[in-house]
Structures are given as C-alpha cells and as structure tokens.
Length: 585
Image 1 (spheres, rainbow, N blue to C red):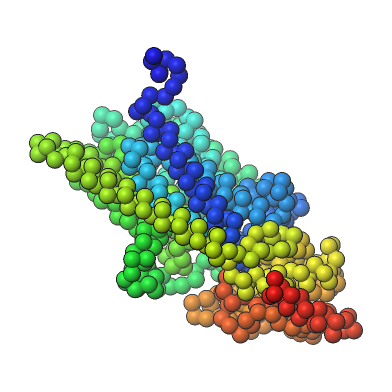
Image 2: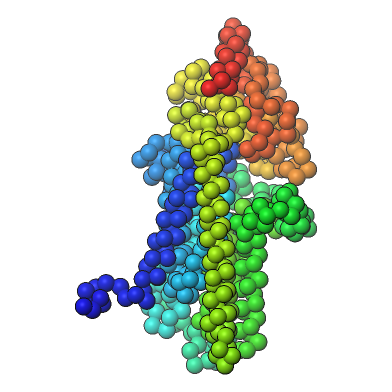
C-alpha cells in the first residue's frame, strides 16, 4: 500500500516532523525540572511580576509607570496571571510555554534549511544554553518574535513568494521593538541591511534577489503601522521622566554597566580560568552549555561561510540565509559590549547563532561530499556526525543527571506567600523572603500600600500589596531625581504608608556594580531623610553586612511609621518570632 496515498508522510519527511517534536519534548522535561525548583531575585523577577500585575489592573506601561522592557512582554505574560493567579509559578509557566513554542519553531526552521541531523546538532546547544537563563519570563516572547522573523525572512527569499512573508516580517520585527525597543530596532536594522546586501551581491546572477516595490512597501507598512500604534497607545502623553527611565539610551538611562574593554575581556578571561574550575572536565562540559561561547563559535562560523561565498562569488541558498541573518544576530547583542553580561547574548543572540552554526556545518558537509574521487566521503562524514551526536547525547544525559540531583536530592524551600507557589534552592534567601512577606501579610491590610526599596518589588507581588509611588526600581541607574523623591514622599503621606522594606542592596555599591548606588548618598537623599525622620527600624533579618547582589546575601530592614510608636515593641518581637519560625521550617 502506498503511504503517500493514505496521507502518511514519506520516510524522507519523517525526520523533519520528528526532530522538532523530540527536541521540544526534551526541552519540556529539561526546563520543567528548573521551573519546579529554581533561584529567583527580588529585583528583576519581582519587577516583571509586579509590572504584569499592574497591567492586569488596567495600568498602561510608560503612562502609569516606567518599565525598562517593552509592554509586549507584559501583555504576553498577563493572560497566564489572569488564569492561574498573580504568582511566580504562573509567570514561569508563561516562560515555559513561550520558550517551548520558540524552540519548536526554531527546530522547524532548521530542518527546512538543513538536513535533519545537522538541525539536531544546532538546536541542542541552544536548548542547553537557554536553560541557564530560564527566569526572565518577560524576554521569552521576544525570542519567539525573533524566530518568527527569521522564518518569514527565509520564506520571502523564494522567487514565488508573495507579500505574506513580507507582511509577517514587518509585524514580528515591530512586536520585537515592543518587547525591548533598542533590541528590536537593532535587529530590524540588521535584517533590512542583510536583505539589501543580498540584493547587491545577487543582482547580476540568474537567480537574483530583486523584490518588487509592492512587497517591500507591504513589509515597511506593516512595521510602520504597528510602531505608530505602539507610540499612540504607550508613548504619546506619557510623562517625560517615565520615558527617560524606560527607554535605553535616553538621557543617562543606559545599560552601561561596565566599560568596553573590560566587558570584552570577560569571555576571554573566563576561557582561561574556566569558570573557576581550572582545567577540569566539568569546566569543559560547562563551556559547551555556555551561551557566550556558543554564540561566538556561531558568529565565527557564519563569518567564514560569508567569506567563502564572497571569495568564490557564488551565493548558494545557505550563503544567502547567512547573509541576511548575520547582522541581526550581531547587532541584537549590542548591550553585551557595555555590560559584559551574557544575558544579552542568551536572550537576543542564541536563536540567530544556532541558525548560522547549522548553515556552516551544512556547508562543511557539502564540502566533504565533493571528495567523491577518494571514496572516503561517507566514512569521514559518518565519523564527524557520529562524534558530534555522541558528544551532544552525553551533554543531554549529563544535564538531566544534574537536574535530577538538584530536583530530588538538594530540594528547594517553598516561597509560601500568595504570590509565590514555587521553591528556591537557597534556604537562607527563602527564609528572609518568607519572613518579610509573612510580616507584611500579618500586619498590613490587603488594600494597604507599602514601599519596597531599592529594588525589591517582589515583596509587593508576593503579598499582593501595591507599591507607594510608581517606581519599582529606585537605584542610581534609574536616573533618580529630587522630583522622584518628592513623588514617593507624597505617596507615603497620601496613602498613610506604615510599612517600608529596605534591602541591604542599598548599602553596597562595589566597583563592578556602581550603578546600584547607595540610597541617601548617591541618590534618594530627600526620601531617605524623610524615612529616617518619620519611620523607625523594627529590625534586620538576613546577612545585612554581606555584599548583596541579585540572588546572594539578601537581607532586609523593616521600618514602621512613627505614628504608631506604641506598637513598635510588639512588632519588633513579632518580626523576630516570624524569622525564627521560618528558619526552623
């Protein structure tokens, strides 16, 4: 019986169907173990959850509160919070779903432009590296936008392509701008430059890339219409100070957390010290799952592929795709040049890097196929494919063993506040957060506002208490002005705020994190003076004097209004009791 006649896929097409499904299933298992027990930060993850909660309540980003990422990510997370509640678990579930969608679509693209076994080699490093940065649920929708833009770009290269791919490319690029403005603009500019370069290098060939004016106008109009709508809804009429705090590179509000030379030295120095492991096997394995190295290798492979095509003046299909994708993949990670943080590479560069890597490997195998005369073509190819497949299979097993150990043996400590419903590995961190959240829940009313400084909106999200004032992030980086101090002070007075949470991150401004500043010295002097005059400390919990960072050495000091001085003694004892009980649990 003919399988094709029955509608069944032919054997040649089965790998194209199976690879995306199998890779997505693997990612689902791998990522689920992390979502079930993970490490979070009171700052970044609290900011995302609290901002998404603001959106659910009807507030508009930029108009009602500043937000360093675009509104698209918030509105993508919001449905999960509406269905499953305003919790970290629901937020991470959104990351889980969007990342699996992006992984599946990226695998689909790779099996279309290369052979299935090469696509498998390219997608697995992406999955393994992306696992290490699973907590940024606000950026996951942006990764989907990038992948869909790549797919549309491949589709529009066909000679029989209509205006549909151009329309989709414009829409996805515009949505990426809405996820993070500077990344979306850089990516779109790189994509446009890549398409223009493809037109230049192929215009004299028989299969030249010469899109009609209607197609280019369609893509440009789609992009422009969405951007205009974005500006009208979110930007026009928004307070200028909020815009300065929201858009990168406006005024002094920039993600410049280091110097160019220092940042560029980071990956090279890590290459020699091997993440502190010295030259151990574990460090060698870690390199293969490190987004920085995967991206660098991909860029080198893509550049070599383009150089080869330019020298031969022969632009095959894989060369054309690489030419379009090379600039977006580089420009999208421009924040790394300032910060040296591999988060920028993971969020914005891994998808394009995986495509460039697969195209280069595919071209290399085609080169091997040209050695027909020696008769060694199949042997050499099989050895390379077998070795790479065995290595990545080992990485998959190794990673799952690591996760199984962390998940079952190490176990996490649950965050028990209403907005938690998730566990973390650091028990000391969990004790502090649980104690602070429990104190707020037991001593404030549900509709009562609090103030969490300087970058701890997680306490607001966990307890479902609103922040006094529009600022979830109150650090030197945020271009804090005396007018901002006055705004928060006025909010404290109008709402009769009784409880203020201050974390030890306000005290430490090491050289590598100067942008945090010190509250009351580098910024926020008026606010700090107001707090000291009108509030009294109930006590500190956690390693207060230890150098604090996002997820390490977290400690808090709780202040209570002087209007209720008669309760201070009781509240001090209550705070001590709560912390002692949480540590025993």
